[in-house]
Image (cartoon, rainbow, N blue to C red):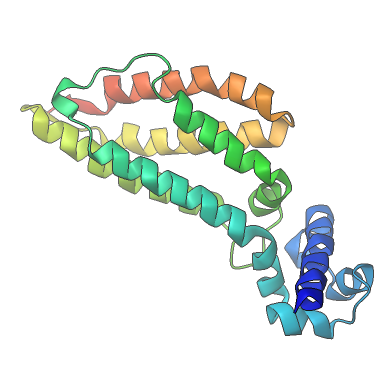
Length: 205
C-alpha cells in the first residue's frame, strides 16, 4: 500500500512538470510515465486516463480554494447590510487565506489557468466568474431589499465579477513571492469592496 501511494505521488509529480511545460493537450502520458520510471499502464491504474491524471494534479488544491470561497460567501450572506460600513482592512484575513491557498500549490493553479485546454477543467476562469457573479447577485439583492427605491446594477455586478477574478489571476501569474502578493492584493481588495458598496445599487426608476 505504501509503495502504491509513493508510486502514485511520483507519477503526479512528474505529470505536474509535464502539464506545466506542455499543457494538457500536448502532454505525453508516455513521457510522464517514463519520467516516473513506470509504464503508461500505471496512469490507467492510478488515474484511469489523461484527464484523471490532470485532475490528480489540480483537484485537491482547487477544492481547498473552493471551500474557502464558499465559506466566505456564507459569511457574507449573514451580514446585516443595513448597518454595514466598510473599514480598510476588513477583508485582509480573506485576502491572506486566498494568497495562502493559491501559493501553497502555485504550479497547480498556473496549470489550471493556462494549461487546461482540452481537459474537463478548460474554461475554469469563466466558471469562477459565474460563481462570483451568482453570489454577488444574491448579496446585492439582499442589499436592495434593505434600501427601498434601489435596484441591483446588473452591469456593474457582472463587470465586478471579472475584476475580482482577474485581480487574483494577474497576481498569481506575475508575482512569485506570496508575501509580495499579499501586500499587493490588500489595497486592491479595499478598492473592490468600496467600489462594490458604492455602485452595486442604483435608483429604481
